[in-house]
Image 1: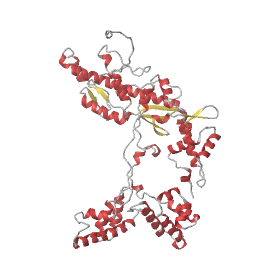
Image 2 (image 1 turned 90 degrees about the horizontal axis):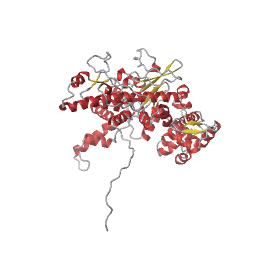
Image 3 (image 1 turned 60 degrees about the vertical axis):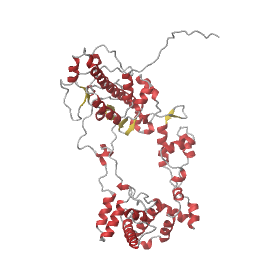
Length: 516
């Protein structure tokens, strides 16, 4: 059998291929501010034609810098002009760009970079990171109390050792035998000499005394080994601090101590019936004791927790301006990146030498990189302007006025692809009068209303939170009841949807919100 003869055929087709410049622009667009900063620093190290100005440098550009410019088109996602001439390929200097997007009549789009905040700004304008904790640490607070005690050197050393072994939440890291073994690891517990046993016994005695002193210090509950012990210590501290113990309910105090010995899940669920059976007490007394326990702090070192110094720098600033809003890029995230003019001019006269081909390639990459950075920030600004215009109700009335918005709507309004909008909103933040939010916060699905319209899921979650905040703690609203209340307001929301939104808000179920 003879096989078919091979043959060639031509089939016309169209295949989309991304140029290296477009791939780089897409990659830069999806980076966050921190990732972009690291990326720019690395690029400056790798490419000698890129130079990064210091933030303090505010002088105008000098002849040593190459005057670069580019025409950023707003009717296409990324402008990739043909390589016709050297000057046409030159990229813009970021700080020289005039960020002028399409003007929208509903708002005052002012793209001028904001000036520095005044020194006497109102405290309401201050950012949360400006109020980092200035109080001493937990160890320093306890050391100060220990310095006022008259202790023998061995007892003071044991107390300082226990203070040094406290966890961040105020609990002791390990039991006393474990801590004693950490101090005397060379002593065997099975076959130890009489002198070693005496040393261990003396050490345990000092540690027990030090633990009693530590647990008597402020804050109450410090030095506990578990949650039950922490609650008991706080109850004893509260009972000792009672102004008139004769008028206090000692039986209730004993019942509260007994409840601390019960399984914690029963206390968390406030299972009055089961706890009443275990403690042989009336449910009314159990409810009173639970109310007392509910006022205690399971994390005694909470107020000494160090506040992280991390600062969230928004990419876009939205501020009130006249009758509208002012939307502008945050100057703090704009890298002051240039193409080194002296190096570029020196290389310009060496085009005919093949040995300089690598340097010419690096110069071209530097120009494209600066241009893609400019395109990135222009796209971010345009998307932010579109979001503010679409969510005008949010900026006036808060989350309850949020409207449904999907990426496709913004993409159509800006004549961009949906994937471009997705890259833009990922990891970018906007500082607004309502707070600082990620771009993706303003996009949400819709929930049907009885009028045939729709409202955003964010607005529905806000209404659910408001209903729960106003509920009677003794008779909290069930998910079904919340669904009925939403229906009365014209919002069609099933019980399971209410439960999903409630869990997204980190609000516990009805049984856990009930106050006995």
